[in-house]
Length: 96
Image (cartoon, rainbow, N blue to C red):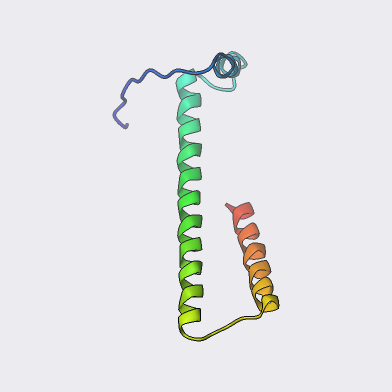
């Protein structure tokens, strides 16, 4: 089992009430379990945000490289590529 470090956190009254209610309802065994789950979700979200940012940077660089190479796209071509990109991205997010 992983080493456990005890920490003290401060929550708003509303957040604390929500945590207590979830434990009392039996959804979680303890408030620590809730916080651990929230941190796992936060970590996943940060990872996805970083991945998206890296993809955006790569796309920007690709566009800059195209400009340097003299490749020029019409507005319609750009729109078509963007639509295809976001359709693919939407499917990937739903599958995640």
